[in-house]
Length: 340
Image (tube, rainbow, N blue to C red; front, side, top):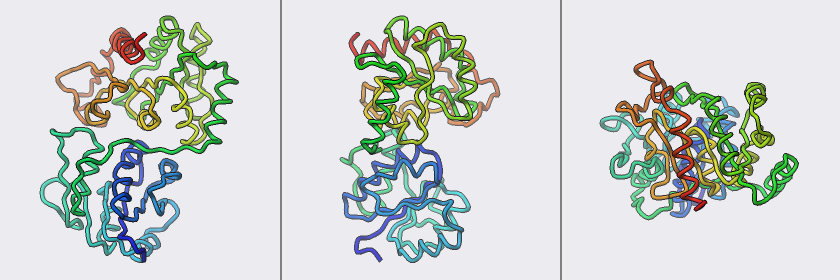
């Protein structure tokens, strides 16, 4: 058993959400807790170099009974369940942890003995909601930094610099990374509109625009980019790991795209971001008071609905958001941040 009281955090998916947990992880460590984290294989890269985690579990590496045995052996003082599904609830119920906390509706329900109540209206940014878990340990969350933390190995940064140079980038060139892959229908702003905005960035700001891609979407992007009339809009260099993606997003001047995991990675690297919001609240997913991060949305009465699919079935927040509206807002954002 660890000499320091142990805390286990459970979040088994969503790289952006795992990254948004890093302020809580850091706060726990600074208050003297040993932090263990249970996640999935894909998201585990986000925490691989995190200096505040003592042990990282990947769900795929364990059968449930084996994992439960490991959890019980560690005799955690507290367990924070961010999944709140049958699998995580069963693990929590038999964990043996003194404090078992989750964000639940109504009163705290089995297997949790602490209900976390986020200050949704007073502090809409989701990082502050996660820091509220500190209260279950008798710690006031006020004053802890909300900065996201995603350390990168130096060799990967050097590799990405070399790939960018090989792709034709030169220092001093305004470099923009675009993420147009939504991951869900409610964020699916049309690719041809992203391309139109990209061409305007080249024309007005002499930008070099790089589209982030994954192997399953590379062919589709190559076909779409073939119709673009400038060589300064192209595929980004390969980003075979999240660390390579983080390196790319640290080196670019601007991230532009949908609200997604890559956007949060860009934020963690100190890179300005400009995001298209549809179903989600910008205030909930953007560091407050930071002028480096802008957004645009249609501003319909139904926004933000908070639903993964349009409840009306029309997706008006996507279909009616024009290139002119997005580029106009992006243009003003660039001029404001870079004083161009």
